[in-house]
Image (cartoon, rainbow, N blue to C red; front, side, top):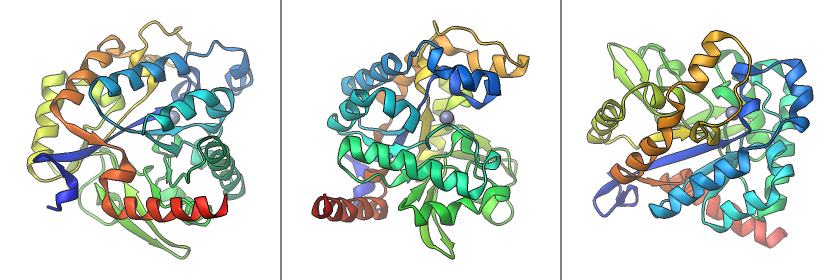
Length: 300
Ligand SMILES: [Zn+2]
């Protein structure tokens, strides 16, 4: 194990937050609601600042995958997160799932969000995470486009419930993807190999589903195997008072499940594990980021 993956004997894991409004999640997506976005009450700034306060209490830095749409409306929030030492990465512009876009639309979406974020923070944005982890074997065409648009790592491939046997879909953790446009690092949310399947244990609804003691047991097992954890949550998951939305019953169950318990569970998680932003925890990605930062300053 390399020394830079350790802090005081603890393995340095990664924690990330997808910064979006509660009404932008794919489970409740509709054309009508999309038209209403600017009329709905915003809660993202308050919820994200709550996360930033929790991270500060635990002296922890994280990666925030921010939607361009949110960054345009809350520029001070993005600047504040960057000033606090967190990594700013892209969650795309309009929370469009990859398979609902043409390659041209996707390119425009990831280019626009990167530009908005870089203009705000004055630093390169090298990481991308697709809404709802929507890069799959059907949308692999998106990966070379990310490279061409200047992204150097992706965190959109989540092989939850897939077989651990096979090729791309059997992979987990951090690895390189070779494409005709070059190489990119893939940083997949953590899964646990259970009876030949990837059991998702890394965050979101799965973190809310299991009691914390169960999640901790899964995560400690991965840690013992030497895996760097890749965790994720959303600001709306720490907001039990958010307005309830209409939608399919299953979506409502998943979205609101144990939502009043996330904040305390996150506190425990931050106490029990040591986290860093993705662009610090993975040495090759850190080297790419630092190299780009020097070029960025030379150009700006
Ligand atoms: Zn999202």
